[in-house]
Length: 111
Ligand SMILES: [Zn+2]
Ligand SMILES: [Zn+2]
Image (cartoon, rainbow, N blue to C red; front, side, top):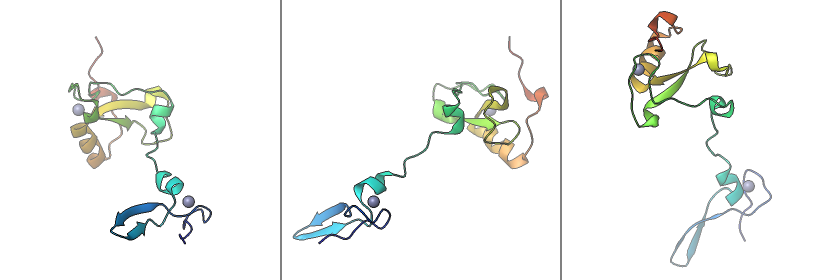
């Protein structure tokens, strides 16, 4: 008899693996172990797309993973596009460390 999932307490726990005759179970059912999906960030939901260029230092890369979205006012729920900047991993760290609000003067002008 399988235990019931400790989260929903409705479905039986999922099988983890078999070892010989023995079956090892998880503590959650299939449904609940999959439940913790990575949520899409708010800016993605708002329709903002990361650029392949850092808005702060101008670094470009074809690897979009090198960029993060920075909230100018520091409020991660403010997803108006004028509050969002694409920054590279380097600038992201610096901005984080300095805890500086974005300064317009840092922007490279758009030509
Ligand atoms: Zn469950
Ligand atoms: Zn940068």
